[in-house]
Length: 188
Image (cartoon, rainbow, N blue to C red; front, side):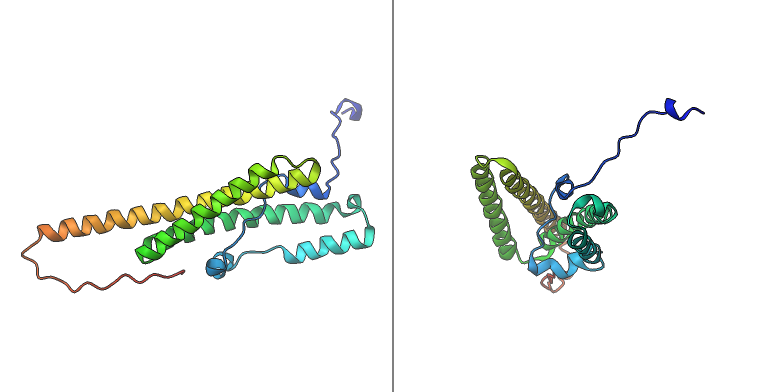
């Protein structure tokens, strides 16, 4: 087989900005961090190796393995964290006292609105710094809106279940009433 007939493969050199190709890492609220982060590879060792490589070699082309490993680890980590964040908010919507859940919805709505406003303001920023600010704000806003949606879905499911329970309870008059125990809520 003739080597010259092979299509040329371009070699890609990774740089730090290549770590910004997907959404930024999600911000984890402290009140649910222990559950969300439990058992997840945080990539801190790989990141330390990347920084050490950059410190020794001074430029990115000599740290390709470290950049590629960190990017792969961070993408996997962030995907897991986003799923867990949404699951956590959904569970809170199912189990938190209604008033606290409503407060949390209000808080997340305010946070999303604030991030949207900051994103609009950042649209005037130019250059790489402007890009980085918009990238970060857009990612945080998207994550916040998905958390809010999951929280609301959990509350809707709970309201539906409680409505069905009350509806069924009213139709079964001949059964002796059972003492109602309040639902316990938990972060996990």
